[in-house]
Image (tube, rainbow, N blue to C red):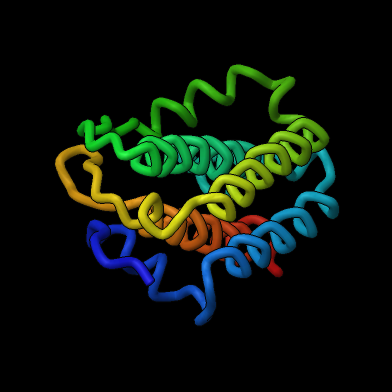
Length: 169
């Protein structure tokens, strides 16, 4: 289980079902893939309230954030303790809505699958020393193991939001 994560992410991780890292990431993958397979194009453009992200932006955010978290974990897995920067999720989401091609369901589906498969491969191959090497992100200490649980918890959080506010499932 994670040891050093900012309070913001602790809530995500605490809501995860009990389990080991790889099965949790695989469970998230099954849930996301099932949801993506059921979408129709109009749903990708839907926003449940003015000023809120569209469903496509939420899915893009999950994919983008996983890329960032995975890069951080990979950096630590290479025993690099550089202080890695934060990223502005709102700027990234705003930027993503201008690339409508990337918001097509088929593109989101394939890109998600590529990123998640890389995530699974990366964490399956890490040694215990690589998983628990301490690095820094925006001034806070963490390790690849903690970041992997953040990936799983972050995705779970957004799948729940999608179910409650975008698709009512």
